[in-house]
Image (cartoon, rainbow, N blue to C red; front, side, top):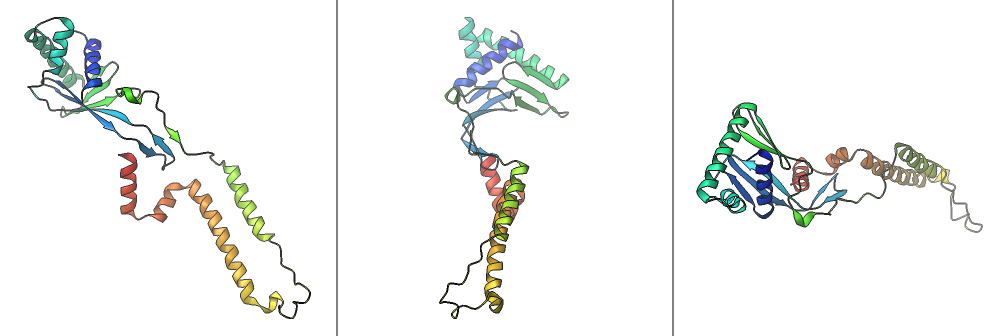
Length: 231
């Protein structure tokens, strides 16, 4: 048995099982991951199955041996010997070279202390129900730097060129010139400043989302939000 055949068997078993044990080496574990947000909540990613490797095994798990026995027409005892010898050689290679490539699955690696871990191929697909599903972007348009500058400039000009309300004949005695009513000038100035601040804040939130999050949320709230997004 070569590495391509072995990797193919493991992948076939993973499609229908949550765990596949490699006797004496460890266990491949498949977990269903639900839909999740990314890109600061602007992208919805579809569900998928994540494949990992744990350096533990159950000697009573004969799934791999039984599969090999059935597909190759050999006895369980003979299949057990073949699988056992191959996995033993795989373990020796992993300990010596610190890397074993499993075509179509990914790479098994070992640390200096011979702790084994698995890195799945980026295009690994082991969730048949998710085939064809693509991430959905909630962004309709991403502003360019030129558009952001133009938006800020336009907002500023709009505030500076706001029309002045003229006095209506017959009401002149009821109204005083603006220079005699400083509170009105102050109120208009405050309102203009608030509008300008809100506009600038919206632009800032688009350009620097991480800094905006730090202004809006406490560290504890950010930790909860990021955990929900990344989990």
